[in-house]
Image 1 (cartoon, rainbow, N blue to C red):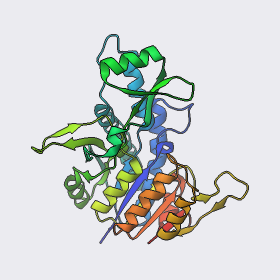
Image 2 (cartoon, rainbow, N blue to C red):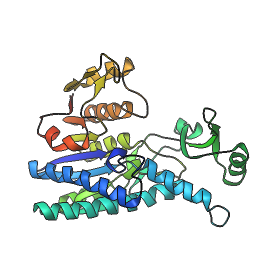
Image 3 (cartoon, rainbow, N blue to C red):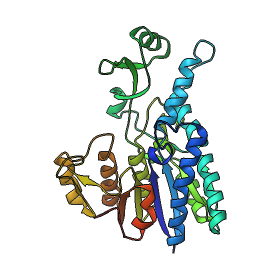
Image 4 (tube, rainbow, N blue to C red):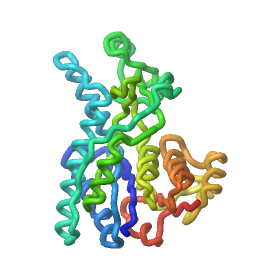
Length: 314
């Protein structure tokens, strides 16, 4: 049987740098990433789920919304995440279609707008701490606090920014749809931006919340719920490093869960950077996963073949 693999692609896979942020630039970056995804499918027979980040794209939507605020309504954060899932999913679908056609890969891709259930009692919802959107003056911040109910903080003397909660993902609500699409032979793009954060009330009704879910933790949950054999987290470096950026930097080809936990405790990985990726891999392997890789987009196929990347095992 084909192996189920979840690949989480990061922001560098969709925006190359600060000078290439237009929609056309983003498509070009997505197309390059899809070349590497297609190479993976040539390497092995896989059931492939692709997740992706969306931080910069959500920031663009919020900034446009702020600029247009004198004339138009603000866009709620859950709608921003949904918008980016559709737009980035479209770019990935189109890029994969073109690349698969060029290589003769007999598959096509489909995007699932994905809701992810979070706990309404998650402590993170009571302590918003993740900055999003643009900087603003104290007066602008106060106006948003009163009118829109935003939580805002002063950010290192650079101005005020909105902060939102980042609760833990609990359940992928469109999981059965993802499974059926995999069974039908599709490459599935799902869980974009960590999923649209929703809560469930006593009647079972859903409501969106102003929160962002960590993409890597949501990808790990997706992989566990699908009972995937492999989780690959794509990032900006070929291998995980200890003492990153220091003279004694050391790259890792293999690491066990126990070693990963030790390195986390020793403070080798930064929050918002490598830390959530390593935590996501640990949770996947402790939840029944067989192996995981962390590498950059250019080395996805080589990592799958065991030639590079950081391989993490139970």
